[in-house]
View 1 (tube, rainbow, N blue to C red):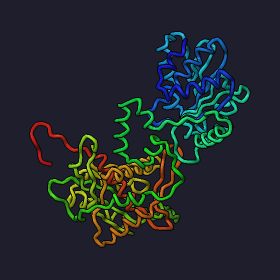
View 2 (cartoon, rainbow, N blue to C red; view 1 turned 60 degrees about the vertical axis):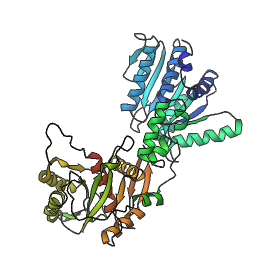
View 3 (cartoon, rainbow, N blue to C red; view 1 turned 180 degrees about the vertical axis):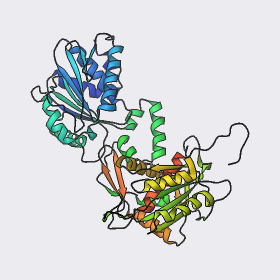
View 4 (cartoon, rainbow, N blue to C red; view 1 turned 135 degrees about the vertical axis):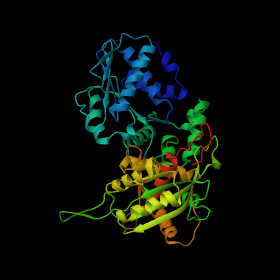
Length: 464
């Protein structure tokens, strides 16, 4: 086995590989951090390093250890990639799989482990190399207590791969330590390649990321961290002054549908106090005591090869406080079916919202989708809302002096964001400052627009 596989890597990948191999072969025991933009080739780099090291150490009973935040799919994908590279190198039928998480070539083993907090990984030893994949999503405590000691007796070389997130992750901590050590001894330990560096070697990647930038916006949290490799610093306001300005439209508010237009709706439901055997049961979403319906008109005229989704023009708000859901049922059905002829409705089905969503689906059919607020689902909802605002795809009717318009902008200006591990975000209005019913309803109307699929004419044209 030669270094040919390493030499086939791109220059920035070879730079990292050379530094890692120098530490391994020189038994230097260095710790590296590698920030590489999404789809930049860090997994291929890792697999080629593993292939080379297993080959060079195949006569020795030694291990390299790689961990990922989850076993499925991340660890499994890493194992599949290494198996493919072993086969490509002519080792098909020679390498062996053991216990479902070990790949052995001769006497050398690659051990793949989950870094999930519940995973039992104690007892493994890393002799050749210790790799931490997606280090920004690995618990600092898990790494320090269970993975780092695996290389203590062998002075193992360690590599942390990933993209940035906020300034409190394991990857960020290792990065800052490495930069400080570099200033002291001049030995490069931190490697950073943003999307522009990678795109300089791959025109297809350039086109892909430019489309993502157009879709998400240059300062969208996901583009900022996964492609520009710039960490998010704490929480703060959910919408910037620039985003608030982008959200403000010039079209007038409407009170009924227009022929030939397509309308969608997002419904955030109030929590109701319920009594069960004398005990008050609070909503799963406390402090939100209003039901808000946001009506969006879809404008397909902006759709082109770059902007594939329609503009969402918010044209109406309905706002009820203190109304029982049972009293709202007939009004909601009438508004959605007869006033606006909505093609898609997304309704909050969290907790006691579930019966309402079921009722609406029974009354209006499959055009109604239930949305349950979980941490991850709400995070995706927030990211999609930001993408719609950043791309100029979401506009709200011009000021009309109404209470709804005033409350809407109060919530937009007071909205906060909290960035959490695993690239998730929470967005909300602090209960001390008010409610976030309009904010959630706005996010749900964007979800409705994203779910709407225009009917394609087949055969003769039929009216809807």
